[in-house]
Amino acid sequence: MTTAPATSPAVPAAPGVLLDETVPARAAWSAVVPRGATLTITDLRGNQAVDCLLYDAHDTAVRYSAPDTLQAQRGIFLTTGSVLLSNEHTPLMTVVADDCGRHDTVGGACSKESNTLRYGHHTWQQHACVENFLAEGARYGLGKRDLVSNINWYMNVPVEADGTLGIVDGISAPGLRVVLRAETDVLVLVSNCPQINNPCNGFDPTPVRMTITEGGSR
Image (tube, rainbow, N blue to C red; front, side, top):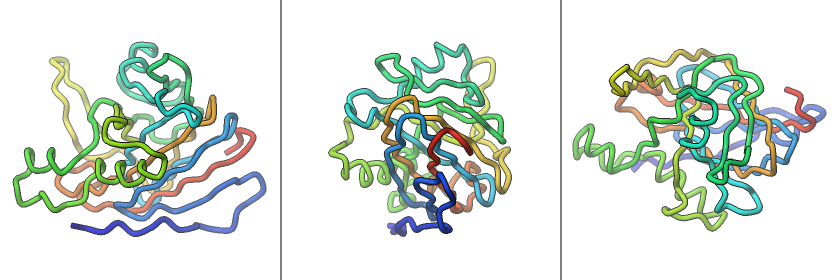
């Protein structure tokens, strides 16, 4: 089993920056983003999928819902203007800027079980996003039943007319950013995807940067 290293500070914080950390390849990360603040996710080296779960920080029974979000925005891809809704149909976060232009929320998160089914039993020992979510979520009392639909930032999952999903080469590039504004206090769990069996990370997971800024500025 691959052991994911811990997150580490990136650079000294600038004015207005509440938190600025680099998440190593394959690692988990979490933080509470205060209402009105922004979370910037920077794809440092390009083509890195960033799996993400969102919860109301004061009531984790209120959590991100892909079906509610997609129905409300009448589209299956997330980009600037997408309002990320909860299972109570309340806004958790809004995408206020997006250098990439497309993000997935229908492909789900990788797990040991899905790796084994798709890529063979020899992949059982490989680290996966579900394991990252369980380890990081345990810090907040969250368990397996709390893992619901997720967002895959920067992951390219085209959907054909017949509903067929594909996981293909990414369209991101080094330094591209997506910026999310918190509409309430939001607990964000991230798995910097460790997948090496499909092209979601270019078969080579890389670090990403997470920056929380007060006042809604980038």
